[in-house]
Image 1 (cartoon, rainbow, N blue to C red):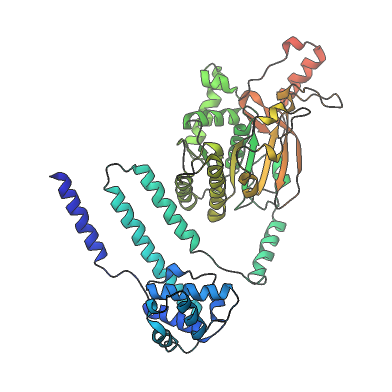
Image 2 (tube, rainbow, N blue to C red):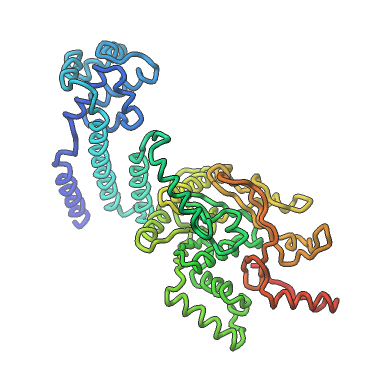
Length: 487
């Protein structure tokens, strides 16, 4: 009984929706096709923005498809050539015959407004697509077997796809908004820090990149325990300390675990002591002050710890933060734990879809996106200094292709290399290998400090740490050397 009521309710709802005439602009469709038929070059004005599916009338869609085929083949387009092409495929009578084509040429005097008319047709098409997507979602929503999260993901993917496909601006003349570029350069030149993008507070990194640039996808690749999460959180922390709101998508750790790591970075207190509550009373006061700082919102870091987040979910969540909280940087930990939200893809295809999705988020929201990525095991089996290369990115060449920047944190000490060629100590020393930089030069950022006890990257060790290490070297007592836990 209840099932029949549900079915009846659904049917009535659908009848109510479909009883209305879908958004359309038949007269403008006729005007656009008429302009194409009377002026040879008219179609070149709209071929990049108007698609056959945008036409509501099936006959108009068919006519436009044949006009496009003639255009792509560099053949002349007029009433006679289109009529012959339709007749050759037995489609002429379907569209209303030669008489209907001749009637279209009487609908408009020239192609002067063809682009304006075409954009209205596109708007009507998008309205119909929104209605279709919503109707499909309503129908699927009534099905008991439908996974609600898959339903939401699919809805977001389709809506975002509509938005992406409708945003084509076409080619711009190089002179358009040229003075905006000059104004931007002058602003950078007059500023004290010369940052082009978002700084992270680690001076050696900021001096290399001049800040992470809006719309860039930055990949941080490393093997487990090399410190990619430590670098990601150090960047988040440094940017937030400079007053820049940032978002951290943690697909591996809980929000509480991330918070503890940020407190360790903030206070330089041993992370293990924080996790196990074995800190001293003095350290406890420092931890309390750090947490109070975060509680008071003096440092704005937003964390989401949803596991297996999809690209659509991430885009929606970060979009809200950008609009409502002014977030200017996103860090994702880590790429291979994400889901594309698309079904039927093999792993390599899915990773490619994820990297393209992250690049789209960076571009659409106009913020830098830093995505941490796992490197392949082949690196461990390589001889020499074991420095990572672009080919070590796991599972997909799309990551390298989509990224604007690819950088690898490298710590020789991790592989037992405690001295450099000059005999200098490599303990706690890290370098950042810039393997790809679309808008700059590749190279290395050397002599970064990795404070392993608090899982933090910095420009240099705190002074007390340098003094302690110097004393130990002078005493030549290796047994008193402090060992580091790797996080």
